[in-house]
Image (tube, rainbow, N blue to C red):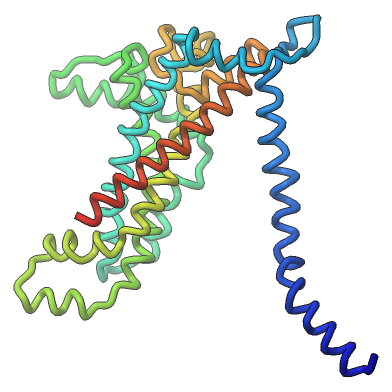
Length: 307
């Protein structure tokens, strides 16, 4: 074989196999830290594995799923709370983020400072944010109740009620993540050609009409992306309800489980009751539910944007 033939063969091998070598590190890392834990969680979910049981782990197949789906009212209560918080957080996040991005897209002084400021809530510690908001929504000495008392609305026990606790937790989530989505929308707004707005201005369109008829339709991919990100984040909501009412009822989401999310119920089963088989089954069901809800959110958002 001549040198030219060897060089040509090496070139063909390089063209054919080099791309796989470039992406191999990602799949290796994903397999070790992503795929293996996922498959192992499915395996554990089919076992009775409780650290408080001296009998050890043994295979029960789908018994954990049967109990979870058909004989566990606490799980469905947690799923209902999760869906309620999803509605109370996802829609306001997207709307507020669009409004903030529109304001930041204007030509004002110190725009960079304001753009940096909106991301600060997202980079702060979630534990610190939750503890501060828990004080703000305190029953006796909270700032929110003090303001409501000025208007004669009286005091509200935010942790005790289902609706009030959901509103308080939703405020925390919306405050923390609105800036993140606003920066995504802002980057996309700056890529919209200015000639579209100039033409709309000549046609007599107001700023509000330009926003809803030009800006929002062109931001459809980013809105869908933010909706999916917000959905997946809210379906695994844990720190906010866990720290909102710390104490003996922290893992149960209140004395009556009024704001216990599915992720918090998983935490209770796994790290309070040490039932890792049952908590793994919750994790698998929650992952499937997240995929379904995210898919429905994608379809709804896409249909709204196309109408």
